[in-house]
Amino acid sequence: MPGAGIRGEARARWLGTGLLGLFLLPVSLSLEVSVGKATTISAVNGTEILLPCTFSSCFGFENLRFWWSYNSSDTFKILIEGTVKNEKSDPKVKSKDNDRITLEGSTKEKVNNISILLKDLEFSDTGKYTCHVKNPKENYLQHQATIFLHVVEKLEEVDNTVTLIILAVVGGVVGLLIFILLLKKFITFILKKAQEKKKECLVSSSGNDNTENGLPGSKAGEKPPTKV
Ligand SMILES: *[C@@H]1O[C@H](CO)[C@@H](O)[C@H](O)[C@H]1NC(C)=O
Ligand SMILES: *[C@@H]1O[C@H](CO)[C@@H](O)[C@H](O)[C@H]1NC(C)=O
Ligand SMILES: *[C@@H]1O[C@H](CO)[C@@H](O)[C@H](O)[C@H]1NC(C)=O
Image (cartoon, rainbow, N blue to C red; front, side, top):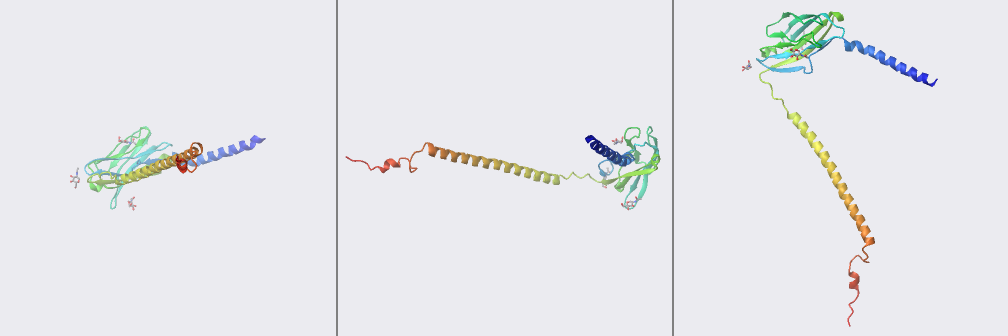
């Protein structure tokens, strides 16, 4: 049977994909903690800033523990900690380092949001903020994500110099390419025209011009004027 080999091969491939899936599954479905795309945030002193953190677990959770820690060169402390009973409840704060911190967000929605809001920012708030989540339902698996906060006196203007230089270079290169293409087209055009002209000349010399030495009227001049 010619089809048997192909079918067997297809089954083997299916099995391979399935096994690969089994290996990938636990990794992609377990507890995940994220602080979003920006891992460094700058904020002005005296203002407030939201430090984002979300988590997800496809196994679900029960009596999940979460906490935010702060770490700078000379300090380490737990800023806020709490629990979430299950997917249908909001987080409960158990303790807080100070009143400038509040827990924002909800764990009832699709995304479990345990972001914190930091008010009246001081320069000494600069440091590493880590959001930790521990899930008893997943063998007390603990995951964390870190965000770096920089408290500044003034937000720097976004420095566009590099972008401008890149744009200028890219623009220059593109311009040059277009110029080269146009130049090529122009040269081809000129060459074509020149060739056409040459052809025309060849055609005309063989078809219309019947002067023998190429100088029109010279034949007539050769004849000595006849005088009577
Ligand atoms: C931020 O710090 C600067 C320098 O210490 C100070 O002059 C300014 O008043 C502060 N701003 C706020 C809103 O506290
Ligand atoms: C705090 O950060 C420092 C420097 O990054 C690191 O060496 C230290 O282990 C951290 N401390 C804790 C408790 O995570
Ligand atoms: C989390 O909650 C805060 C406060 O409600 C909100 O500003 C933020 O956008 C939320 N983050 C996500 C990813 O939903």
